[in-house]
Image (cartoon, rainbow, N blue to C red):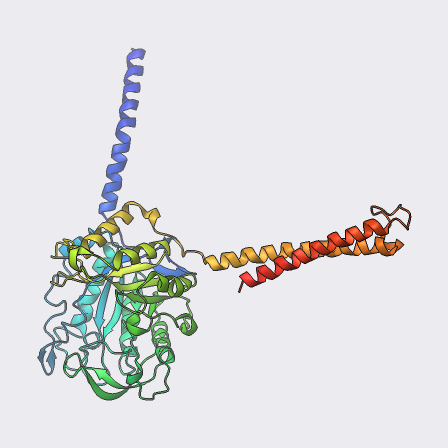
Length: 485
């Protein structure tokens, strides 16, 4: 009987060992299929980290509609025709479609007038109705495991309707907008605040010709026209912009600690002056924003490496918009190079746009089921799937500055060369002591017991060796100094 029990026990153990891996895999699959809300996001040096302190690199999609439909069309006093543009963006099916793309971030553009209920926006599409709809959409996305970026996308000064994005945030309403948004989402650090979509401060827009674009970006300035969103393209009007520093101060004064994004100039593609004009965030929870499309000022690896990589070594960088033009033969000229470069530099990116629009560029899907568009959508979906299966392909921290590494190495070598020089000087001095019969320098050293008349021969030889060592060390020090420049 004992033998039977022993045999059954062994059989049960074998079956358990065989079944366990499959059971564990199924449990993990169930866990993966049941996303949980992320644990918050903050800046730690040059990285974004979650509530556990683990590094996070954002890979996501933009979804458009909430920036324009609520203000376009309608009648005076009842502007707008929808909140989501007649699209099922906020439905569980669409969120599930987004989920299938393996993204961890979604960017939702907002309209200043619609959020605040200004300038005749229909109450059905603005004010409390708009804020409630956006709030629920953001909450649903977070509960689906996504970080959400909300950005001030469309705005306008004075009593003009926000039917376009302006060169910069306006002092008339932007502070009220961000104060309200900050209070609304202050308890949810899974939401990031993109302070202004795409600044483009051209000289012809300045009220005074001597104004500097980066100073205006940081501190605000006076402009002489605004974009109408129709015809004419611009309209003459004097107004004051709100600088990035003012917007940072507004959010922090409202009590929100959320991560802030400050996009650069030239439609957010020029970050060349970002570090020199970095806004002061008392919480040090600010990242550099950057948009990148083919044909722009900074749309090549050389510019990314020269301009963006140095920023990424100081603060996190998020590409809030990028895309590609399918072109003939499904040739992608931008997206593959950008995302692969970004992956190697721990740079986050969000692609435009998760809307089934019938364009040949910058559109990721063909229907609300999330079917990838040909070329761009297919490439991006496949790339995200590969990253999801192989998270090690994405750098967890910025690539090191090779020039700095080389400089450090040169610094160490210079110390070695200086020691060599001092050694050469010591040899030279000893040789001189022998050659000139300075007895106080000779005690205990080689040749010190030789007859004084014979010491000058090795002394001269040692002087020659010391001189050679000194000259060689000086040459090496000079070369290392030159290579550090």
